[in-house]
Amino acid sequence: MHHALFFHGETLHLMPNGALFWPARKLLTVSDLHLGKSERLARRGGTLLPPYETLATLEKLDRDLEATGAETVICLGDSFDDLAAFDRIEDSARLWLARLMAGRDWTWITGNHDPGPIEIGGTHRAEVHLAPFTFRHIAKPQETAEISGHYHPKARLAGQSRPCFLADAQRLILPAYGVYTGGLRSHDATLTALMDRDALAILTGPRALAIPMPR
Image (tube, rainbow, N blue to C red; front, side, top):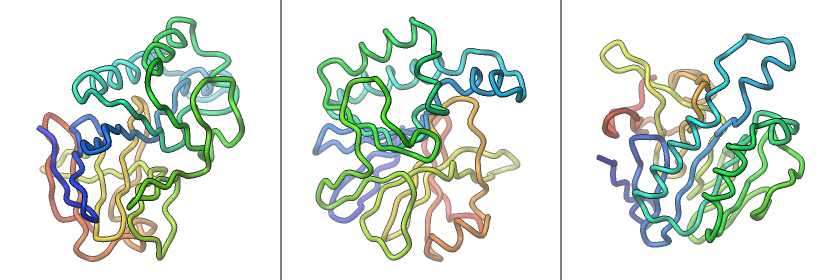
């Protein structure tokens, strides 16, 4: 039920859960997991949320890894809700994450919530170049063949707001993959300035659904 996007000579699968799969590379990309968000909010005196989002997000990721058979994973930043989040997540989540990482080439791209090193396996980079694409956390104007996250885009269809991918000829922005993450409407000036007039919004849900990007 994915949406197949032909982007700079490569076919990419935009998946209903918000992950991006590149079949030719057996590569799965996800953005903005924000693991540990409920703990961070409680620690800093914010809104109290049920402390289940980390396991729910890892369950989503487990399903997508199993469905695709991905051998390489790139997490596009803000994987943890802050620098202390990994140290405070429950042991069951640590073990689950370690199992998902085992045997896979795993890269953590740093984001604005997790800018420093964390004590976890995998490779840590500011951005990744895999021809023809550049993977980074925040989109840069004037870049081409760019895949990024950060903005948590959402779009509304039939009165319902859904996380979505945004795609035009130059760039692809992924939705937030983590449970409990908010979002930025596609008609926000920040996103309309980044995306071309003919951009698509590919909505997540039971199936990935492409519509003209609402402005």
